[in-house]
Amino acid sequence: MVVTIFCDVIKPHGGEVALGSLVDAAGLVGISEQAIRSAVNRLVTEGWLVSEAHGRRSIFRLSERGSLRAEVPLRRVYQCPDATWTGLWSILIAKNWNLDHDAYVQASMDLQWAGYGRICENVFIRPQMEGDNMLCCAGSILEKEVVCFVGTEKQCPMNGTIKEVVGRAWDLSTVADRYAAFKERYSRVLEWLSKAPSMRSAEAFALRLCMMHDLRRIRIMDPQLPSSLLPKGWKGVKALELARQIYQALLPLSEHYITEFMNGPNPSMPDAEKSFYERFGGLSSA
Image (cartoon, rainbow, N blue to C red; front, top):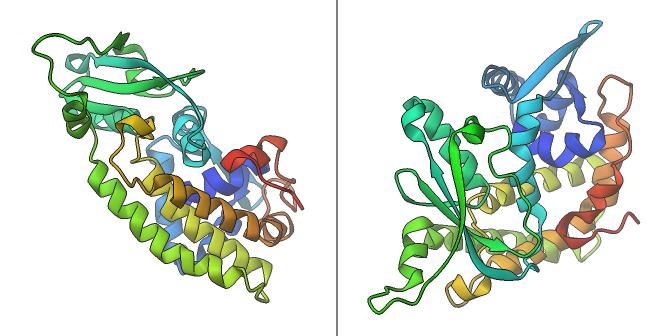
């Protein structure tokens, strides 16, 4: 949940937050102070966060490396499937023989968060979309331990189907099941919101946080393949649209909570940066 708070809330609002605000925000969704402090300490140890003392308060922000590692998966959480596939594939060969096992496991996860699928121990693939300039390894230990290629499928006489490769590289059935569960759960939320219920800003913020935590965990698993490579009846597009509608409905009240009741180095958080409103293909500030 701490990662969700930093990516969805803190990053577009100045990037820094007081520990007390983190504790209060997590408390709104039923997470204890002890659990949040433990999670924050673990993320500092792992290099995701750094802290700075401001008087008696501790202020946290993503580290330079943490910000780089979060950039690609964060963008993928909110991006809409409107890019055109070039027909080309990005192919990465990791020099895993230069890395210890634990470091390589983490680096492999970074690639999977960037949409790559693993087809064997150290070979990763991803469809190359039009205008795709994502730096998949930025901030990762693989940054200098990977060789990148661009390739295309060739129609050889003994050629197998590319869908066999897709099935090996990504667990699409699990992703589909999670989208279905998300859609079932949050369709009821949107129906309730459509009745314009009375709601406090803290309640809107908590609901937004819960939804984004659930959505983020699915979106970083989803390779976001072009439609020609997806199974029939893929639920990802409709689930993302559902999330956009709920996010938009909760936006004014949840943003009010952030700017009025959370703080970083200053007594209040700044308004969201302009790029924040590009999420989900475009949000209204009204």
